Amino acid sequence: MMTTRLEYVWLDGYKTPNLRSKVRYTDTQIRSIDDCVSWGFDGSSTKQAEGSDSDCVLRPVRLYYNSADTVNSSSYLVLCEVDNADGTPHESNFRNKLQHTLSETEQYEMLFGLEQEYVLRNMDDSLCGWPESGLPKPQGEYYCGIGCHNTSMSQFVEEHTRAMMDAGLTVHGTNAEVMLGQWEYQLGPQYALEVADELWISRYLLYKIGERYGVYPDFHPKPMKGDWNGSGCHINFSTEKMRHEWTMPDIHKFCEEFGKYTPDLLEVYGEHNKERLTGEHETSAYGEYSYGASDRGCSVRIPYITMTSGRGYLEDRRPSSNIDPYQAISGLIDSVTVTEKDMVQVDYKV
Ligand code: ADP
Ligand code: MN
Ligand code: MN
Ligand code: MN
Image (cartoon, helix red, strand yellow):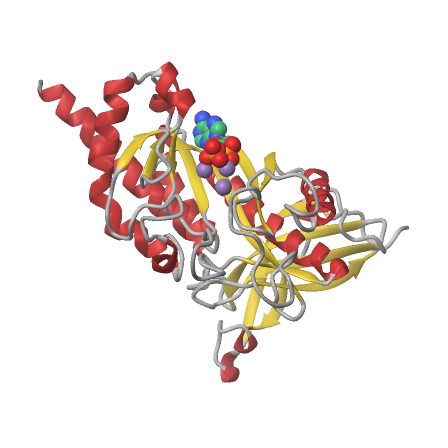
């Protein structure tokens, strides 16, 4: 019997959660998540408990093949929710809260696509590809750029993308971003819980493969002050009606009404996001709401494909690169479904 390596992965109790993991080995055959047993950890070391009552429970919820492990041939990532010792969900367990939101909004059949931007840093915290002193040439040629004078760490990006696909994530694509050393990949379209789980696993893989290259991903929304783009995590979303029923006037009406929820959404769209949402560098100003077709300075963009066909999906450009997708997507579902519900009611009165 081959020994299998199981790396249990969970989120800690920080405001912007960090990934944590610990590893166990088993000789039992692992066919599905049901074959993974619950496990405990010391919550007092992760901002999830007091030292006097420190036991928290890791409850396995999803299993991913781990091809980033080049040492063990049978190796999996076990994504876990955190419970209290009495079996109730821990207060940091926003995955559980997202499931609750979903159970009340099933009929909207929402789909999501996430665009994760990040920059890569060396172990001394310097940005990958940047000169030791002074600045690289100004932004312009780096976005979707080709060649080692315009990009940095493209081999790492390939390796990460391959690992995401091996793990079964819904990889949509990748591109070099506007700032040197900045990259993006997209996940989806996919269901809320699935894509949120995928985002955390994809980030885990960035950190883990980065350990081999001596680099790490930085998800700060504004990694470099000045005339350099920040990092976002645009959330593309659609409801069943947006995909199959609506025409352009419905889309416009939705976008108009959706603006009401800006303060609620900014609460869950990432820490330090104010530094990024300046109204420049392809962002809308913090707290201001706007929407428009193909306009990248808007809060919400109506993509070209939605514009031309009258239906499809919308892009919320405000979420920052460091979002907790469980919290951001929960908030977005609340706002989107309330907006859509109100629209239907208005129509009936006419
Ligand atoms: P951008 O032009 O904003 O850079 P990208 O090509 O990087 O766009 O990303 C587009 C995203 O939209 C992808 O994550 C994709 O999964 C997502 N997407 C496509 N169709 C839908 C849909 N119907 N509902 C939700 N998301 C979608
Ligand atoms: Mn993109
Ligand atoms: Mn981008
Ligand atoms: Mn985008």
